[in-house]
Length: 423
Length: 142
Image (cartoon, rainbow over all chains, first blue to last red; front, side):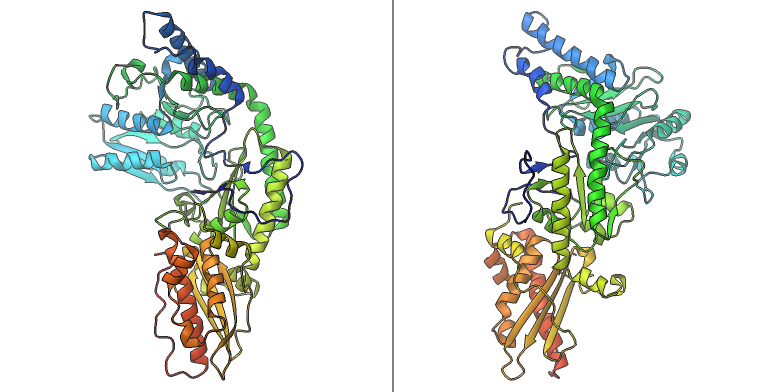
């Protein structure tokens, strides 16, 4: 996705309400700011408590290890796991790689078939593609118009060579929630391991590895107001016991599954972020959903021909992904450049291909080019949401005045019937 | 990505936005690009039948900031030129003027195509021997 917020120029008649500081950050699926409470928890480990958690024979090492083990507990609690089931990594991309490659290598004799979905994050898709080069067979399940996979497709795809199903809990672009509990149930019945990239879901909606029948789950620090460069992988210890082949060899850290000196301050930060998320979730969900709906209403009540991408019902509370017909996404970002959001438009990518997630929903390329993703976060306010809504409406109206497509549509021309020169 | 000041200027204050009567004999209309590729430009010119000078130019563009800037600049440049002089405008001139990065060169190509298409349409209406020779190729997003 292309992102905004470069601070270039500014063209609007609107002034931000008092207390609203520009630019406004509303791209919380990309990353989140560090919560000050998280920073506070980390500070000692960035300064005086610098020990190596693997140093067994002095105070410095013990203090570091204590910090790490507390964090392991905090992460485990948030997802209903036990501390021993948490492996710390450098982030969710590493977690996804370790989960998928680790299972593939460990269960190679049992089978060589992996099932995933077309709307997964690249960390999953590209990992699967690499495994295909090594002789694995991968099924990429399609999604329905609302972005959800069809459970019947999944059932049909599982065969006696299937060793892993990897389906994300919540999509990073459209915020759509897959039915992971049902997916996990099917996997369990068929004796197949279930990994979920839960990066966008954990800390935002309740995820429980037991109720949701999850065997392996990827978690990221910086998506939940923790630091960048740290993540975790939940690996089930019983019913069934999951074994992973390590992908990084070395000193045998993390029960041999992930060698490398532990990122103690990062891990402590991830732990603190998880604890805060757990404590604040009920209230925070309500607040974010309220702000998200307020933004949606403001936009939809003031503009025609705007379309929500993906299921509205099965969606993260803080996600809004909308296409503004007849307006190209990047030019819209440019017009609202005091607001940091993302677009599924292709315009800044070298491939000139719009979002593969939106294409997978059957959204036409034209509407995919016109999409904007809003990710509302813990620190956004109602005043910010109102300003963002007004700016979007103002800019879409201006760009539609500039759009030959809008003009043609208003003249009653069916754009689908036009023979375009560049097809 | 950071935009050049000239792109920002054209995006913020686009020149010659609007439409001319496409049924008028003096008006040539070029419509190039495709919504699926994320760029559509409509460029119109009004030509003085005596002098062949382009007296008016208007555009509307669906596309990124660079596409809007390229077409806005194109209308500025064709105005006051004769039809033949306007045909000499090259996409590379637009790239240079707007400092477009490589990933945005297709925007300038589309603007050149729009000029040629508008002139071609005008020539066809006015019984020229043949329309503008350059076929509009699929450059916008392939």
